[in-house]
Image (cartoon, rainbow, N blue to C red; front, side, top):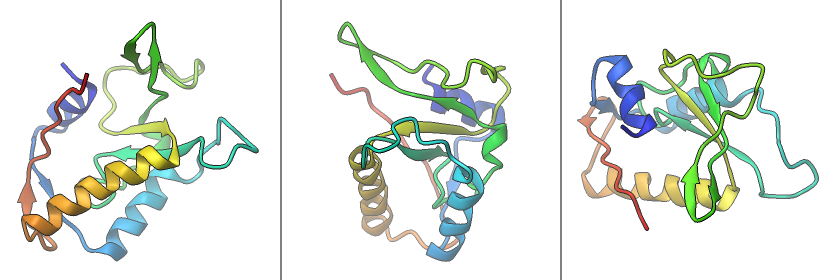
Length: 135
């Protein structure tokens, strides 16, 4: 089962609820501050991507309580090892922080923003996010 599905199962729902931009900014700060850049001095190589997304009511958890992973391709296969060996995933976390490039983070945010616009989601609306594997 993909990690985002495990996270939602632990939370007891697969429904997310939209929030306004102000709440999204506060949620992002809560989850991603502080955030240790794994590529200091390399602009755009490391940014914090959170799940549940900051733009949802379910977002905004304390980042210290999240599983923190760094997705990477190893021998043509995606894996996401734990970023901090001193804080291994327990399997009980209800949020996720990913270390990804700023470009990938912006792209993912753009897709979610397009979904919200296309579906005309406003503050409090419920929706599901379905992920598909790309090869």
